[in-house]
Length: 579
Image (cartoon, rainbow, N blue to C red; front, side, top):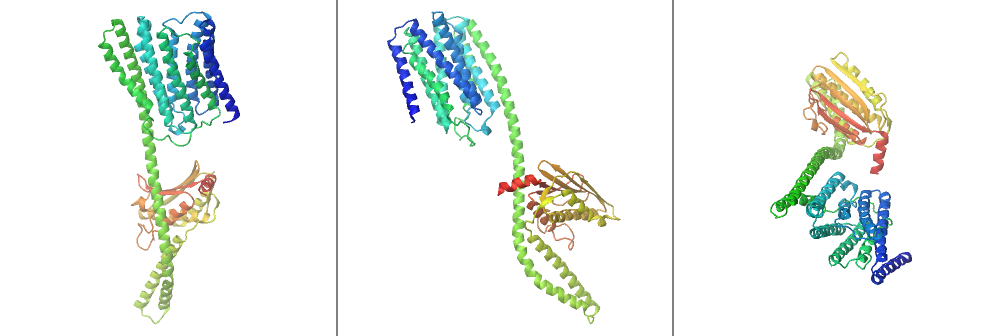
């Protein structure tokens, strides 16, 4: 402990001893009364000022300190009533006094502040639900006061019954606050734990002081400034010093979620108990022998509280339903993203394992294949062979060349590697790919249309790889249109937030199994017209460009291939984040 803290501790202890000495030794009278009331009022005002300062200084927990400030403000108003009557008017407080209602409500403000649990991270907070719970609990405490205390306070004045009921209800309210503070403090970590424990001690001292003062009032032994006020003054000072302590602590909530415990839903449980207590209190009112006008007033108060709390329950349920719909929608999107991610991972594993397999096999096949092709060409060129034998030699050569092309495709597929990337104009590459297929569409009932945004943002990519991908997608679409005797191919390219989207949409027969089109060796073309590796290679190119490619069938017929590429700036950010 530093010397400054030791001096403050010694000074505080000396102040407490001085106040205790004055309370013990000073004779009862106006001076002692003025000393006690003014000191209590000063301490409560200091607590208000410090709480208000925390409202502006503690940004994340501003609502918490605002409620504590309002509670201290109500406390100060009640203390001002005592000071006004005893110091200025030199007479005791009247009974009943409006200050009792204000004093009762200030504890409700403290409970609402604790119910906010500002130590939780922002993602775990439910501000609207917490507000509704606070309002419902506040209404319930007001209802209890109107049900238990108010009838004997203003409807039919009965000072003894009113004082007894008020003291019991106020004790219950203070005990609930102390218990809630203890539960929250025991389940909290970090600096907030220290704050809660200090508030717990201050509230416990105040509860004990209130009971001692009420007991002394009942025995006509209480007077302001006496020894009974000492613990009350200590509790007020402790509350103010807790607010001062906060200014030296970092009360920013941690990013970790609050650990699960049985007190985490304390506020909703208290609300449930509050609502269930209404019919029980109504039944108790019906079967008691109280005066008819008091019974009717209590029933009317119960009915009003039931209607108001029922409205809040409806609003809370409506809010919960909206949150449930939002959560279900987020869960559905997360599930779809998870499925998409799983498909991508499986596809990448297939490509990786298959690439290793075919790389070795293709090299081994290539050598004997070259020999077969060479000998078949020699046989075909031999003029001594008869017609049938020459034809067979030519067929062997054709099949050998077809096998050579297949081996070349396998080697090209297996040797995919990240190529050097530069800034690429996707629209220009798409336009070039379509121009290279213009010859195939001449004289046929095929219409190719391109809708490319004029100011497409650039992406990081390899022009040759992208061109081969677009060429293959265009060729597949044209082959599908040739099968049905013609149709249209629409290619679009537009920018979206953080990405460029390219779509190849044809009016052909569509894909038999869109989910399998990227599998290696999967093809619907006749034997000899395709190896089933083109779309797999295109898939690998798009993945290497940090993009996405998917296939779907249109409702009115035809297939759509959608390619998404991140913008150059966004792709650089993602790459840096993965590094």
